[in-house]
Amino acid sequence: MSLRARTDLTPREDTVTHDPTAPSPERPTEAAGGSGSGPLGDVVVVDLSRALAGPHATMMLGDLGARVIKVEAPGTGDDTRGWGPPFVTPEDGGARQSTYFLSANRNKESIALDLKDAADRDVLLGLVDRADVLVENFRTGVLERLGLGIESLMERNPRLVVLSITGFGHDGPEGGRAGYDQIAQGEAGLMSLTGSGPDDPQRVGVPIADLLSGMYGAYGVLAALHERTVTGVGQVVRTSLLAAVVGVHAFQGTRWTVAGEVGRAQGNHHPSIAPYGLFRCRDGAVQIALGSESLWRRFCAGFDLDPEAEGLATNAERVAARERVIGVVEEAFATWDSAPLLERLSEVGVPAGKVRTLDEVYAWDQTRSQGLLLDIEHPTLGRISLPGPPLRFFDGAGAETTRTGHRPPPLLDGDAAAIRAWATGDDQA
Image 1 (spheres, one colour):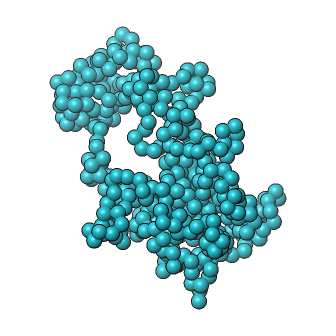
Image 2 (image 1 turned 90 degrees about the vertical axis):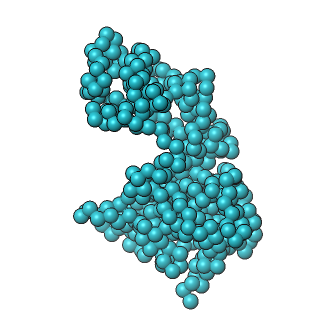
């Protein structure tokens, strides 16, 4: 997808007048820190965000080839640089690195700027003038108090796309609330759906509200960049932790809004499909997912069960009799160890799997085959492995075009000289 202005379309009448054929600001080269590859290779992102929602969004854009310039607080940097343990200390005794920070900041450069300092604000404004995207997740009103209101930034650079992420929305009766993942998981209903039962609300094991809002934010940025090819001007994209979690309520949402049923946590079994979940066997447990009546019949044939048993012939009947179904399945599995059981399930064509620990996931050949583990040279830690981006690209002939060269998460202020030169145009001398 080219993000430069298209000449085959006319700007919409309701937009600011702008010449859509005007050239975009000059993009950085590989030598200046650009990626030199990827579908967003001509896009520059200024990242004012910290912690996880915004940094996850900008990492996604960086994975796609964008040049991401991370602006951090002098001395401390992004909050997550201090989040741990675990930390990793270089063999030469240099500054320790937070594994939390490493998880969300690959493919970025870093510059430390004090946004209350006039000279540093000027550097930031120079970056904004040449950027395509700005990402921020300050509480509402903070940028305005710093003299960096979004409206004024977009007046300087009408092509700028701004992604703004908050905890609970930018307006509304609770729009000013601070956003933290666990609080958002609870407030947005996710914890009520997660756990062993209705009285055991549990958070998801990763900061899913942060991650989802970052994903939605990156998705919105791409849409705004595409629209800019038509209108010639940027716009503001807003999302929040609350919106992101509500956005993935899926069938649990319509279960309430349409059917009037309030979903509750019920452990490792699906509320609308049975059998579908985690089932005990002789030496542990396996998961099965019987999402159709044909799979139910196939499963029953493979384990000498009657698919037409009274009260179990249809999915609706099985959901109503879930505890009985669990008993029937676990009785059939009782004489099986998990490894041969998974082989048997595969033989009869039933979707099944085990529950892997993370060390098992990253050692799994399938994980590695999908490019989900990157080996990267870090400036102080040496060769490290990082979870990789979840997208792959191929051309029409089937040849893979996925980006292979990735930058390590940056050291604090580690790219300051090059960024300052680029922001002021001195790199053109």
